[in-house]
Image (cartoon, rainbow, N blue to C red; front, side, top):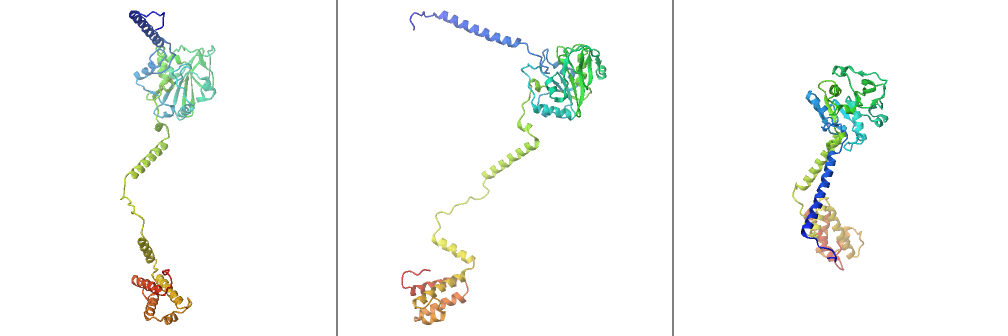
Length: 388
Protein backbone atom coordinates (compact mmCIF):
# COMPACT_ATOMS: atom_id res chain seq x y z
CA UNK A 1 0.00 0.00 0.00
CA UNK A 2 1.25 3.50 -0.83
CA UNK A 3 2.62 5.22 2.21
CA UNK A 4 0.67 8.16 3.54
CA UNK A 5 -2.81 6.99 2.41
CA UNK A 6 -5.35 6.22 5.12
CA UNK A 7 -7.15 2.89 4.89
CA UNK A 8 -10.94 3.44 4.66
CA UNK A 9 -13.09 1.74 7.27
CA UNK A 10 -15.67 -0.71 5.99
CA UNK A 11 -18.61 1.52 6.94
CA UNK A 12 -17.29 4.49 4.98
CA UNK A 13 -16.53 2.25 1.97
CA UNK A 14 -20.07 0.86 2.03
CA UNK A 15 -21.55 4.38 2.17
CA UNK A 16 -19.48 5.43 -0.88
CA UNK A 17 -20.56 2.37 -2.90
CA UNK A 18 -24.25 2.89 -2.06
CA UNK A 19 -24.02 6.58 -2.97
CA UNK A 20 -22.49 5.77 -6.36
CA UNK A 21 -25.24 3.18 -7.02
CA UNK A 22 -28.02 5.64 -6.09
CA UNK A 23 -26.57 8.36 -8.33
CA UNK A 24 -26.26 5.94 -11.24
CA UNK A 25 -29.87 4.76 -10.84
CA UNK A 26 -31.15 8.33 -10.69
CA UNK A 27 -29.25 9.24 -13.84
CA UNK A 28 -30.62 6.28 -15.79
CA UNK A 29 -34.16 6.92 -14.57
CA UNK A 30 -33.88 10.57 -15.56
CA UNK A 31 -32.92 9.58 -19.08
CA UNK A 32 -35.92 7.22 -19.28
CA UNK A 33 -38.30 9.91 -18.09
CA UNK A 34 -36.84 12.33 -20.63
CA UNK A 35 -37.38 9.80 -23.40
CA UNK A 36 -40.99 9.19 -22.32
CA UNK A 37 -41.78 12.88 -21.97
CA UNK A 38 -40.03 13.92 -25.17
CA UNK A 39 -42.51 15.50 -27.56
CA UNK A 40 -42.91 13.42 -30.70
CA UNK A 41 -44.05 15.00 -33.96
CA UNK A 42 -47.47 14.16 -35.33
CA UNK A 43 -47.22 10.73 -36.92
CA UNK A 44 -50.49 10.70 -38.95
CA UNK A 45 -50.53 6.92 -38.39
CA UNK A 46 -53.62 4.84 -37.61
CA UNK A 47 -51.58 2.92 -35.04
CA UNK A 48 -50.97 6.14 -33.07
CA UNK A 49 -53.58 6.91 -30.40
CA UNK A 50 -51.90 10.12 -29.24
CA UNK A 51 -53.03 13.57 -30.37
CA UNK A 52 -51.07 13.47 -33.64
CA UNK A 53 -52.29 10.07 -34.88
CA UNK A 54 -55.13 8.96 -37.15
CA UNK A 55 -56.45 6.13 -35.03
CA UNK A 56 -59.75 7.95 -34.33
CA UNK A 57 -60.33 8.33 -38.07
CA UNK A 58 -59.63 4.62 -38.60
CA UNK A 59 -62.02 3.57 -35.80
CA UNK A 60 -64.67 6.02 -37.04
CA UNK A 61 -64.75 4.26 -40.40
CA UNK A 62 -64.89 0.87 -38.67
CA UNK A 63 -67.79 1.96 -36.48
CA UNK A 64 -69.70 3.24 -39.52
CA UNK A 65 -69.40 -0.19 -41.19
CA UNK A 66 -66.78 0.71 -43.77
CA UNK A 67 -64.36 -1.96 -45.03
CA UNK A 68 -61.13 -0.42 -43.75
CA UNK A 69 -57.69 -1.95 -43.27
CA UNK A 70 -54.04 -1.04 -42.80
CA UNK A 71 -51.70 -1.50 -45.74
CA UNK A 72 -48.23 -2.36 -44.42
CA UNK A 73 -46.56 -3.60 -47.60
CA UNK A 74 -44.63 -2.00 -50.43
CA UNK A 75 -46.80 -0.33 -53.09
CA UNK A 76 -45.82 -3.06 -55.55
CA UNK A 77 -48.32 -5.32 -53.73
CA UNK A 78 -51.28 -3.01 -54.34
CA UNK A 79 -54.04 -4.68 -56.37
CA UNK A 80 -57.71 -4.28 -57.16
CA UNK A 81 -58.74 -5.53 -53.71
CA UNK A 82 -58.07 -1.98 -52.48
CA UNK A 83 -60.27 0.70 -54.06
CA UNK A 84 -59.12 3.73 -51.98
CA UNK A 85 -55.64 4.22 -50.52
CA UNK A 86 -55.16 7.00 -47.93
CA UNK A 87 -51.57 8.24 -48.12
CA UNK A 88 -50.69 10.70 -45.33
CA UNK A 89 -47.24 12.19 -45.79
CA UNK A 90 -45.22 12.14 -42.54
CA UNK A 91 -43.50 15.29 -41.37
CA UNK A 92 -40.01 15.77 -42.86
CA UNK A 93 -38.26 15.63 -39.44
CA UNK A 94 -40.12 12.53 -38.18
CA UNK A 95 -37.45 9.83 -37.53
CA UNK A 96 -40.06 7.05 -37.72
CA UNK A 97 -40.92 7.59 -41.38
CA UNK A 98 -39.89 5.26 -44.19
CA UNK A 99 -38.97 7.06 -47.40
CA UNK A 100 -40.49 5.46 -50.52
CA UNK A 101 -38.04 4.35 -53.18
CA UNK A 102 -38.23 5.13 -56.87
CA UNK A 103 -39.74 1.70 -57.57
CA UNK A 104 -42.36 2.34 -54.83
CA UNK A 105 -43.38 5.59 -56.54
CA UNK A 106 -43.62 3.88 -59.94
CA UNK A 107 -45.76 1.08 -58.46
CA UNK A 108 -48.07 3.62 -56.79
CA UNK A 109 -48.45 5.57 -60.04
CA UNK A 110 -49.21 2.36 -61.91
CA UNK A 111 -51.87 1.34 -59.40
CA UNK A 112 -53.65 4.72 -59.65
CA UNK A 113 -53.31 4.74 -63.44
CA UNK A 114 -55.01 1.32 -63.59
CA UNK A 115 -58.10 2.57 -61.73
CA UNK A 116 -57.15 3.12 -58.08
CA UNK A 117 -58.28 6.09 -55.99
CA UNK A 118 -55.57 7.85 -53.97
CA UNK A 119 -56.40 10.24 -51.13
CA UNK A 120 -53.20 12.24 -50.67
CA UNK A 121 -52.80 14.19 -47.41
CA UNK A 122 -50.01 16.72 -47.06
CA UNK A 123 -47.88 18.68 -49.48
CA UNK A 124 -44.62 17.74 -51.19
CA UNK A 125 -43.55 20.51 -53.56
CA UNK A 126 -40.44 18.54 -54.51
CA UNK A 127 -42.56 15.60 -55.73
CA UNK A 128 -44.87 18.06 -57.48
CA UNK A 129 -41.89 19.62 -59.27
CA UNK A 130 -40.87 16.16 -60.49
CA UNK A 131 -44.36 15.54 -61.87
CA UNK A 132 -45.10 12.61 -59.55
CA UNK A 133 -48.82 11.81 -59.73
CA UNK A 134 -49.31 15.36 -61.11
CA UNK A 135 -49.53 16.60 -57.51
CA UNK A 136 -50.37 20.30 -57.06
CA UNK A 137 -48.03 22.81 -55.45
CA UNK A 138 -48.72 24.61 -52.22
CA UNK A 139 -48.84 28.33 -51.54
CA UNK A 140 -49.37 30.66 -48.59
CA UNK A 141 -52.92 31.45 -47.41
CA UNK A 142 -54.68 34.21 -49.33
CA UNK A 143 -57.87 36.15 -48.70
CA UNK A 144 -59.29 36.45 -52.20
CA UNK A 145 -60.78 32.93 -52.53
CA UNK A 146 -64.51 32.32 -52.40
CA UNK A 147 -65.49 29.55 -49.93
CA UNK A 148 -66.79 26.41 -51.63
CA UNK A 149 -68.04 22.97 -50.45
CA UNK A 150 -68.51 20.24 -53.07
CA UNK A 151 -72.00 18.69 -53.28
CA UNK A 152 -70.81 15.28 -52.07
CA UNK A 153 -69.36 16.89 -48.94
CA UNK A 154 -72.48 18.98 -48.47
CA UNK A 155 -74.63 15.83 -48.69
CA UNK A 156 -72.47 14.31 -45.92
CA UNK A 157 -73.30 17.26 -43.65
CA UNK A 158 -70.21 19.43 -44.10
CA UNK A 159 -71.32 23.05 -43.70
CA UNK A 160 -68.32 24.93 -42.41
CA UNK A 161 -64.69 23.91 -42.19
CA UNK A 162 -62.25 25.97 -40.11
CA UNK A 163 -58.99 24.69 -41.56
CA UNK A 164 -55.92 24.43 -39.32
CA UNK A 165 -53.17 24.59 -41.93
CA UNK A 166 -51.79 27.92 -43.16
CA UNK A 167 -51.03 26.45 -46.60
CA UNK A 168 -53.37 26.20 -49.58
CA UNK A 169 -53.22 24.66 -53.05
CA UNK A 170 -52.40 26.82 -56.00
CA UNK A 171 -55.27 27.31 -58.39
CA UNK A 172 -54.95 25.22 -61.54
CA UNK A 173 -56.86 22.96 -63.93
CA UNK A 174 -57.98 20.67 -61.11
CA UNK A 175 -61.48 20.36 -59.72
CA UNK A 176 -61.93 22.10 -56.36
CA UNK A 177 -63.80 20.10 -53.71
CA UNK A 178 -63.29 22.34 -50.70
CA UNK A 179 -62.10 25.90 -50.28
CA UNK A 180 -62.33 28.59 -47.62
CA UNK A 181 -61.76 32.31 -47.65
CA UNK A 182 -57.98 31.76 -47.62
CA UNK A 183 -57.70 29.39 -50.56
CA UNK A 184 -58.18 25.88 -51.92
CA UNK A 185 -57.97 22.98 -49.43
CA UNK A 186 -59.00 19.86 -51.38
CA UNK A 187 -58.77 19.20 -55.15
CA UNK A 188 -59.39 16.17 -57.34
CA UNK A 189 -58.28 15.24 -60.85
CA UNK A 190 -58.13 12.10 -63.01
CA UNK A 191 -54.90 10.16 -63.39
CA UNK A 192 -55.16 7.54 -66.10
CA UNK A 193 -58.18 5.40 -65.28
CA UNK A 194 -57.90 6.35 -61.58
CA UNK A 195 -58.38 9.44 -59.46
CA UNK A 196 -56.26 11.53 -57.10
CA UNK A 197 -57.80 13.52 -54.23
CA UNK A 198 -55.28 15.91 -52.63
CA UNK A 199 -56.05 17.44 -49.22
CA UNK A 200 -53.49 19.86 -47.83
CA UNK A 201 -54.89 20.14 -44.28
CA UNK A 202 -53.38 17.04 -42.58
CA UNK A 203 -53.76 18.20 -38.94
CA UNK A 204 -57.55 18.41 -39.26
CA UNK A 205 -57.90 14.61 -39.25
CA UNK A 206 -55.74 13.82 -36.21
CA UNK A 207 -57.12 12.38 -33.00
CA UNK A 208 -57.03 15.78 -31.34
CA UNK A 209 -58.99 17.61 -34.06
CA UNK A 210 -61.30 15.14 -35.78
CA UNK A 211 -64.00 15.76 -33.14
CA UNK A 212 -64.45 19.39 -34.18
CA UNK A 213 -67.61 20.44 -36.02
CA UNK A 214 -67.89 18.89 -39.50
CA UNK A 215 -64.33 17.44 -39.35
CA UNK A 216 -65.54 13.85 -38.77
CA UNK A 217 -68.15 14.15 -41.54
CA UNK A 218 -65.52 15.41 -43.96
CA UNK A 219 -63.08 12.65 -42.95
CA UNK A 220 -65.73 9.98 -43.59
CA UNK A 221 -66.85 11.44 -46.94
CA UNK A 222 -63.24 11.93 -48.05
CA UNK A 223 -62.23 8.31 -47.34
CA UNK A 224 -65.38 6.57 -48.60
CA UNK A 225 -67.31 8.37 -51.33
CA UNK A 226 -69.50 5.29 -51.85
CA UNK A 227 -70.41 2.33 -49.67
CA UNK A 228 -68.82 -1.07 -50.21
CA UNK A 229 -65.41 0.18 -51.33
CA UNK A 230 -62.37 -1.09 -49.45
CA UNK A 231 -60.29 1.64 -47.80
CA UNK A 232 -56.64 1.11 -46.84
CA UNK A 233 -54.44 3.47 -44.84
CA UNK A 234 -50.85 3.29 -46.02
CA UNK A 235 -48.68 2.58 -42.97
CA UNK A 236 -45.46 1.71 -44.79
CA UNK A 237 -44.43 5.39 -44.96
CA UNK A 238 -44.82 5.59 -41.17
CA UNK A 239 -42.35 2.75 -40.55
CA UNK A 240 -44.83 -0.14 -40.31
CA UNK A 241 -43.56 -2.41 -43.08
CA UNK A 242 -44.12 -6.17 -43.17
CA UNK A 243 -40.89 -7.94 -44.27
CA UNK A 244 -41.13 -9.37 -47.76
CA UNK A 245 -39.44 -12.63 -48.79
CA UNK A 246 -37.65 -12.89 -52.10
CA UNK A 247 -40.12 -15.47 -53.46
CA UNK A 248 -42.95 -12.99 -52.87
CA UNK A 249 -41.12 -10.15 -54.62
CA UNK A 250 -39.79 -11.80 -57.79
CA UNK A 251 -42.17 -12.30 -60.76
CA UNK A 252 -44.27 -15.44 -60.54
CA UNK A 253 -42.81 -17.13 -63.71
CA UNK A 254 -39.29 -16.61 -62.33
CA UNK A 255 -40.26 -18.11 -58.95
CA UNK A 256 -41.85 -21.13 -60.70
CA UNK A 257 -38.67 -21.62 -62.76
CA UNK A 258 -36.52 -21.56 -59.60
CA UNK A 259 -38.70 -24.16 -57.84
CA UNK A 260 -38.61 -26.38 -60.95
CA UNK A 261 -34.80 -26.12 -61.08
CA UNK A 262 -34.56 -27.05 -57.38
CA UNK A 263 -36.85 -30.07 -57.96
CA UNK A 264 -34.68 -31.21 -60.89
CA UNK A 265 -31.49 -30.91 -58.81
CA UNK A 266 -33.03 -32.87 -55.93
CA UNK A 267 -34.14 -35.59 -58.37
CA UNK A 268 -30.62 -35.75 -59.83
CA UNK A 269 -29.05 -36.07 -56.35
CA UNK A 270 -31.55 -38.79 -55.40
CA UNK A 271 -30.86 -40.70 -58.62
CA UNK A 272 -27.11 -40.48 -58.01
CA UNK A 273 -27.50 -41.73 -54.43
CA UNK A 274 -29.76 -44.71 -55.24
CA UNK A 275 -28.17 -47.71 -57.05
CA UNK A 276 -30.34 -48.81 -59.97
CA UNK A 277 -28.23 -51.84 -61.06
CA UNK A 278 -25.49 -54.27 -59.92
CA UNK A 279 -22.06 -52.79 -59.31
CA UNK A 280 -19.37 -53.24 -61.96
CA UNK A 281 -16.76 -55.71 -60.64
CA UNK A 282 -13.30 -55.10 -62.15
CA UNK A 283 -11.46 -58.14 -63.53
CA UNK A 284 -8.58 -59.14 -61.24
CA UNK A 285 -5.09 -58.97 -62.72
CA UNK A 286 -3.88 -58.40 -66.29
CA UNK A 287 -5.06 -60.59 -69.18
CA UNK A 288 -2.76 -63.55 -70.05
CA UNK A 289 -1.37 -64.51 -73.47
CA UNK A 290 -3.97 -67.26 -73.75
CA UNK A 291 -6.76 -64.70 -73.25
CA UNK A 292 -5.19 -62.53 -75.95
CA UNK A 293 -5.02 -65.47 -78.37
CA UNK A 294 -8.61 -66.41 -77.60
CA UNK A 295 -9.75 -62.86 -78.24
CA UNK A 296 -7.76 -62.72 -81.48
CA UNK A 297 -9.18 -66.06 -82.59
CA UNK A 298 -12.70 -64.89 -81.87
CA UNK A 299 -12.00 -61.74 -83.86
CA UNK A 300 -10.78 -63.77 -86.82
CA UNK A 301 -13.78 -66.02 -86.54
CA UNK A 302 -16.21 -63.12 -86.55
CA UNK A 303 -14.39 -61.69 -89.59
CA UNK A 304 -14.46 -65.07 -91.40
CA UNK A 305 -10.63 -65.08 -91.82
CA UNK A 306 -10.14 -68.88 -91.57
CA UNK A 307 -9.44 -69.31 -95.29
CA UNK A 308 -6.89 -66.48 -95.27
CA UNK A 309 -5.12 -67.98 -92.23
CA UNK A 310 -4.84 -71.37 -94.01
CA UNK A 311 -3.47 -69.76 -97.18
CA UNK A 312 -0.90 -67.78 -95.17
CA UNK A 313 0.24 -70.94 -93.32
CA UNK A 314 0.57 -72.92 -96.57
CA UNK A 315 2.44 -70.06 -98.30
CA UNK A 316 4.92 -69.85 -95.43
CA UNK A 317 5.60 -73.61 -95.64
CA UNK A 318 5.93 -73.43 -99.44
CA UNK A 319 8.54 -70.67 -99.27
CA UNK A 320 10.50 -72.56 -96.60
CA UNK A 321 10.51 -75.71 -98.78
CA UNK A 322 11.68 -73.75 -101.87
CA UNK A 323 14.56 -72.18 -99.95
CA UNK A 324 15.57 -75.58 -98.49
CA UNK A 325 15.59 -77.10 -102.04
CA UNK A 326 17.48 -74.17 -103.53
CA UNK A 327 14.54 -73.02 -105.63
CA UNK A 328 13.08 -69.53 -106.04
CA UNK A 329 10.14 -68.53 -103.80
CA UNK A 330 7.79 -68.28 -106.80
CA UNK A 331 8.44 -71.82 -108.02
CA UNK A 332 5.30 -73.68 -109.06
CA UNK A 333 3.68 -76.03 -106.57
CA UNK A 334 4.14 -79.23 -108.60
CA UNK A 335 7.84 -78.60 -109.14
CA UNK A 336 8.38 -78.09 -105.40
CA UNK A 337 6.44 -81.30 -104.63
CA UNK A 338 8.47 -83.23 -107.24
CA UNK A 339 11.75 -81.99 -105.80
CA UNK A 340 10.97 -83.26 -102.30
CA UNK A 341 12.75 -86.60 -101.95
CA UNK A 342 11.32 -87.69 -98.56
CA UNK A 343 7.94 -89.38 -99.25
CA UNK A 344 6.43 -88.49 -95.88
CA UNK A 345 7.34 -84.82 -96.25
CA UNK A 346 5.96 -84.82 -99.81
CA UNK A 347 2.66 -86.31 -98.58
CA UNK A 348 2.32 -83.76 -95.76
CA UNK A 349 3.15 -80.90 -98.17
CA UNK A 350 0.47 -82.02 -100.65
CA UNK A 351 -2.08 -82.46 -97.81
CA UNK A 352 -1.38 -78.88 -96.57
CA UNK A 353 -1.91 -77.46 -100.04
CA UNK A 354 -5.14 -79.44 -100.42
CA UNK A 355 -6.52 -78.26 -97.05
CA UNK A 356 -5.62 -74.60 -97.67
CA UNK A 357 -7.06 -74.44 -101.21
CA UNK A 358 -9.87 -76.99 -101.34
CA UNK A 359 -10.72 -77.85 -97.73
CA UNK A 360 -13.64 -76.37 -95.78
CA UNK A 361 -12.68 -73.24 -93.76
CA UNK A 362 -13.61 -74.70 -90.38
CA UNK A 363 -11.90 -74.97 -87.04
CA UNK A 364 -10.57 -78.53 -87.51
CA UNK A 365 -8.95 -77.77 -90.88
CA UNK A 366 -7.46 -74.56 -89.46
CA UNK A 367 -5.85 -76.47 -86.59
CA UNK A 368 -4.67 -79.24 -88.93
CA UNK A 369 -3.26 -76.83 -91.51
CA UNK A 370 -1.37 -74.72 -88.96
CA UNK A 371 0.08 -77.88 -87.35
CA UNK A 372 1.27 -79.21 -90.77
CA UNK A 373 2.83 -75.85 -91.69
CA UNK A 374 4.63 -75.68 -88.35
CA UNK A 375 5.97 -79.25 -88.72
CA UNK A 376 7.21 -78.77 -92.30
CA UNK A 377 8.90 -75.48 -91.56
CA UNK A 378 10.63 -77.12 -88.66
CA UNK A 379 12.01 -79.83 -90.98
CA UNK A 380 13.22 -77.40 -93.65
CA UNK A 381 14.58 -74.60 -91.46
CA UNK A 382 18.36 -74.81 -91.00
CA UNK A 383 18.66 -72.26 -88.16
CA UNK A 384 16.74 -71.34 -85.01
CA UNK A 385 12.96 -71.43 -84.55
CA UNK A 386 10.82 -70.79 -87.56
CA UNK A 387 9.29 -67.29 -87.78
CA UNK A 388 5.57 -67.83 -88.08
